[in-house]
Length: 277
Length: 277
Image (cartoon, rainbow over all chains, first blue to last red):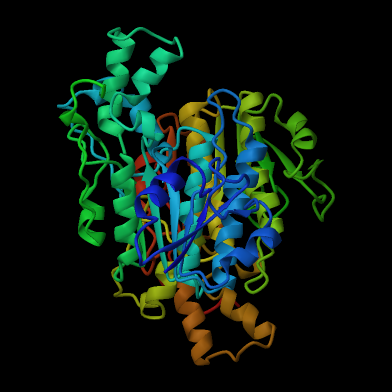
């Protein structure tokens, strides 16, 4: 199976290719604006903002994993970049998938498409006994232009899959907290903040950051497993899944992915009571 | 109440201003790319595509009714125009409403945001006894790039109203079949097609077109009434309403608008068994 991965050298792309790259059934082709830092991967260099530049990369592809994205800073939203990369870029990817007759597209959406629930209920939401549970049927409540742009991608994917000839399958994953390997554990965000001098280990902010990530953690291996199950799926036309590990504390449903594609995550934030040494 | 109406000289804008323009509590200000054909309305000439051009029209405004739109042909979608007018234009309207501290925005959405249900169930859907009912909780299923662009507007409105200081209220109306005055009845689409030589009066296509419009008709006076109720509402922060008359045959819910803002439509497609003379 030939799998094109836009943004293939980024945080999520490397989680997928690091974990699944040795599998005989997949041939991954990263597409990115920059080469892989190790220089050892054959990257198709292009931006999803330019249809003509990316279109050749779609020939002969069975699946596209569309991860290329502009993630804005919290304060300076930079709508122009969001529109160009996330709106226009996603439309370009879907058009190219259609023109090249690609069977399936997997799309990296985000928890920010429903981020206003967190803004409304935090910090109580980070406690184990809070009972909010969001799934694909929850009304969308984006917390940012970024979230709005990702809803555009989910909706555009549904339009293409239901109305156009290709892709025939479209899966949106609302990715929660996936981190680079050194921070791929429920203490990752808090430890990184300590290193950056934002707060002290053991402070209230530290503990709250840990509680949040115990709920939001999407381990790199669980991400790769969900992608694997999606690439093997033969039953689903359109689905929205939460991209999150099996965290007891989570307010994002994983039953829908379990039921539709057999997602069986291995990690749970509650299994950790300290950062790794 | 000062009410800015983008696209104010179009099909929906004239339905509103023709019906409510004499009301003492409203001062309507049309904004449009073209003057009103009668030349007797003081139109602010600008395109929503240009933020700087429209921004001055928002000063001192209590409500914006955002109707300006690019409606593509069925075959040639013209994504560039859809993106520029419907995506970028709506973002500009929301930004301007925020910057000018406008309290409420009413947004013309469309049945096409859930148009795939019709494609799936028509023509049985046009029968009186079909029991599909769509409301604000139904999963979105856009049938076109146009529908996708209108979902962008609904979601961007929710983001602004929940996260930004202004607008404080946002209402999306999924407008069904609203027509110019000569065709403002359930036989309108069929009679117009006869005039255009598309089919004969009494043909199967004629009868099916009538059945469809008996379900989809949004009379001009019911549209104006819904707008009036929305402009008077003091309880709702965000809502999605169907823009449709009280048609027995409809698959679009009106109970949500009835409950939230007291919408009480006067027209029902079933009351007609022939076109007006």
